[in-house]
Length: 123
Image 1 (cartoon, rainbow, N blue to C red):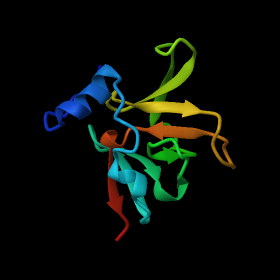
Image 2 (tube, rainbow, N blue to C red):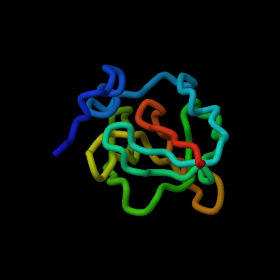
Image 3 (spheres, rainbow, N blue to C red):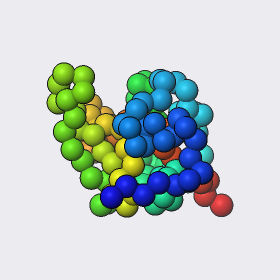
């Protein structure tokens, strides 16, 4: 069952619960370079460390690795071909898609909607 944070914006609700996508290059997190961690904007679970973030050129914050056991995946055919979609395991919120065109060591690209993330800089 999906848990919804009542403080989310309409745009966040569209992405999290209706599997929408924010426009490319619209997230301030694309430019975030500080050391820290990224959390689910819906439930607050830590999802990514900043040292796994990289510039993919896709227009969305991208990571080559998530923290262990934080996402569940399913296959989505919305565009007419198979893509791996990922959701927060804790709250069920949609975050984005995983592609096999990322850098070493994993070769993965977690293409995440910035609206779904909260960045917290390391103190």
